[in-house]
Length: 281
Image (cartoon, rainbow, N blue to C red):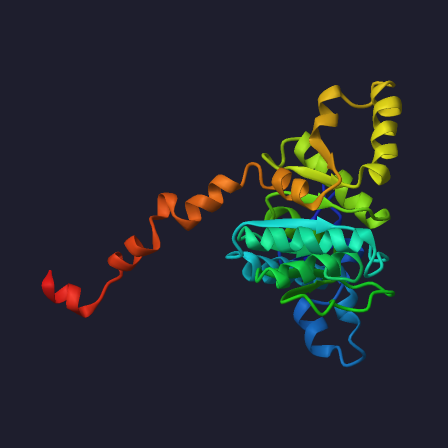
């Protein structure tokens, strides 16, 4: 219902409330939310409106949080979707995924082909948890066959949150623009203190060396970054070193999960409630 609201010059303008909104003049002449809901009989144009998108975005966060909340220790691995099976980069990805799985660490990738497939394949080979976070793109082919837990996203920013929130570090294989995007975003998050104790390991000194040289010779020399910013990344050429660097701050937590603060498996078994124990008490 439209009501009249007085103005300072004593003239009246249409005004009404629409949920939390105060609408006046022409804005107040719009139909109510219920009217739009009940009177719309055409094609589903409403699903393309921003308020509806907010609900979809919220649902992606809810689904992601729910699926990954109990994942445990994990490392996100990035690299090119164009990496060919059998190539050195691919085989290194398989080795990294396998070694992480054997350490009890889940592997998170973008779920696509190439280096992502390699890391997921290694995780499966190592009897570990293989996660793929896919994204709706016109040229992607869906999840690779080695993803055991796959979540597909419409929105990059929801997907990016999952890569960081549920990982304890990044391992970055050679890749293109998407890989660079994830790399530099992680560096910014660490630099600004948004995430802490978050190792970023680059694999392939020949591939990444020129980029690091540019960071030193251009950005650092021109005062665009600080010397300590270069310490945000580490470079190696072997799968073993990559895993060691990525897990440097995590191995203590893994040991605690396996024994440490949670006790041994035997101690946990002793603490399990049973009717017999209850009768004895």
